[in-house]
Amino acid sequence: MATIDTYDALVLGSGEAGKSMAWYLGGAGKRVAVVEQRYVGGSCPNIACLPSKNIVHGASIAHTVATSEALGTRVTRSVSMREIQARKRTMVEGLVQTHLSKFAASGCELLMGRGRFIDERTIEVALNGGETRTLRGDQVFLDVGAFARLPALPGLVESGPLTHVELLDLDTVPEHLLILGGSYVGLELAQAMRRLGSRVTVCERVERLLPGEDPDIAGGIRDLLHDEGVDVITSADVELVSGRSGDDVALRAMIRGTEKIIEGSHLLVALGKAPNTNGIGLERAGIKLTPSGYVSVNDRLETTTPGVWAMGDCAGSPAFTHMAFDDFRIVRDNLRGGQRSTTGRQVPFCLFIEPELARVGLNELDAKRQGVPYRLAELPVSSILRTRTTGETRGKLKALIGEDDRILGLTAFCPRAGELLPPVQIAMRMQLPYHAIEELVVAHPTYAEGLVSLFSNIQPLRPDMS
Image 1 (cartoon, rainbow, N blue to C red):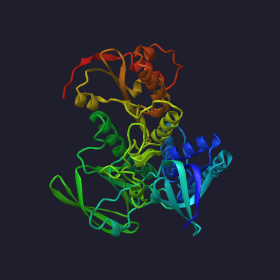
Image 2 (image 1 turned 45 degrees about the vertical axis):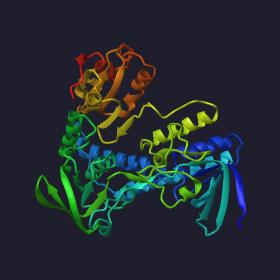
Image 3 (image 1 turned 120 degrees about the horizontal axis):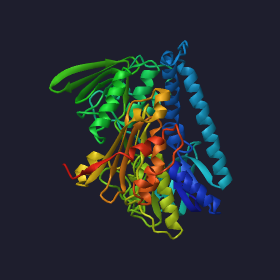
Image 4 (image 1 turned 120 degrees about the vertical axis):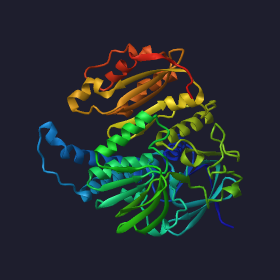
């Protein structure tokens, strides 16, 4: 019988929540083992958030150069995808080394290999070097993440499509990139690759982009992409994929009753994610899944097995790194005797196109769907004087105010939109009236001045208009 190594805590997966838990427990003197199959630190620093924003920034610089003449500067434009990728890879290597240093400093044992449960709180690890170890933990924390989902579409697998992982590692710019799905990932990469020199076509199945956002915001983003040369096709029900991504690939789609063939050189699939819960022996540990394949957890992120928690994407939490970090904080605080819950927490997000789209709380669609009366505040971005100095006047701000003067939500489609969320989040969390922001003295000229102007422009109460 294999020797079982016993630990105070086992962490399966080194993503945002898992590594944070490991560093916390290790720093507190616990004996901790972390099992990671491939990406030290999880997807965010390796293949997702930070690499994508690195490429997006490179594309932003290329766009600035391409449009610099309007600002009085003439620059010769030449994009080197190899150099952009080299910068990204250097960043990733540095982030991995930072993670390794933190694991070492916290005293955690990092095992590179694939782990699967063979019994309750017991994991067998097939190490990448070929050996096998068996580990048991008094406590076990799951943070195994999710992977890009490929639908059961005829010809799709055979076409060798790209996911965001492969696209973010290309050393050449695709001649004509087809993107299946108008997700956040799809739209960020659509704008970025267009700015780097690709022709780009986005195929979205529903009738408009971003159906969860207000129509004026979603329409503004479609207009933005159109103006930059991205072709967006909505109501596109793709029935067949043919050819080979990287060479010649084609989508056969029904678009409002008419069949159309959409051709390109590369195909990116951006249709969301599925949890990495198959094949890791959860049933042997008594850990149940939801019908969608996520680990079943309560509002304290406890699984159906005592002493086992799940966090991040695999637990069905909102699929953002910052929400995974909050998962860690909830579990950590409850281990200390707290009573924290995932119920009712804020879920801010930012879509990193230019200008950015950021939101927290309700938008008009949500309020109408839920029957929540509200007052609306709107402000065109051109009213923020800082944007007149930069020429970035596209977009708008929207806020919903409740009957009691508290802020129900903010939507910002503007430059630096993500940076505008925190003061509004603080006001919402502390249940302050909107006057708390309206009466701020904000430095001039800054983008944040727009919040003062926005909350000075409240319209009459709007009842449920669903």
